[in-house]
Image 1 (cartoon, rainbow, N blue to C red):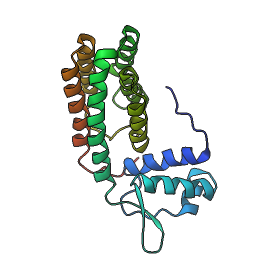
Image 2 (image 1 turned 120 degrees about the horizontal axis):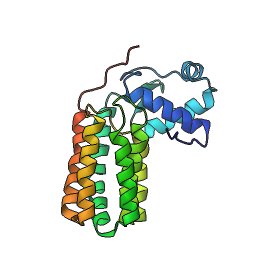
Image 3 (image 1 turned 30 degrees about the vertical axis):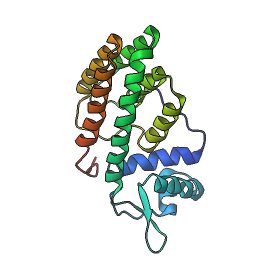
Image 4 (image 1 turned 135 degrees about the vertical axis):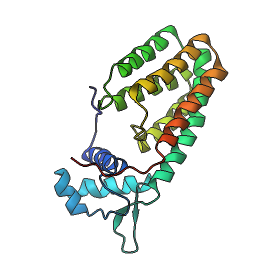
Length: 213
C-alpha cells in the first residue's frame, strides 16, 4: 500500500486528528486538550497546536468562550457542502477529460480501478487508490486551476466520507465513468461523476459512531 508522505510533524498530526474526528473516535463536542493529545500521539504540544488551527480552518474544530478547542458539532454538514462543491467541479473535470484524455491516461485509471475491485471492503488501501483514480481524471482534464481547487477540497477530507457503499460498488461506478470517457461522451461522463460524488455525500448522512475494539 502506498503511504502518504508528510513533510512535517504538523501535517502528520493534522492527518491523525482528522481521521479520529471523521471516524467518530473523537465525538462532536469533545474537548481537545493539547497536552493530552500530544501524549496520545507521541509528539510535543507544538504540532498539536498547529494541527488544531488547521482543522479549525477546515470546520472540524471550533473554540469555546474560553478559547479551548473542541470537535465541532456541525463538521458533518460542512463535509457534505464540500462534496456538493466537489461534485460540481468533478463533473466539469470529467466533461473536459472526455475530450482530452489520452490512451495512456485512460489505461492508468483502468488499472487503478481494477486494483480497487480486488480489495477487501476493510482494506486501508482504498483511500489512496480512490484518490489516485479521481486525480487521474483531473490530470486528464488538463486545467491547472481546476487541479488546484480539487487539491484544496481533498485536503479537507482526503479519503472521502466513510460510506456504506462497498469497494465493488464504487469500482462499478468508476467503470461506467471510464466507459463514458473512452467513448468521448462528455455529458454522460459529467452526469455519472456528479451522481457518484453526491451519492457519497448522501451515504454519509448518518453521523459516525465511535469505534469500539
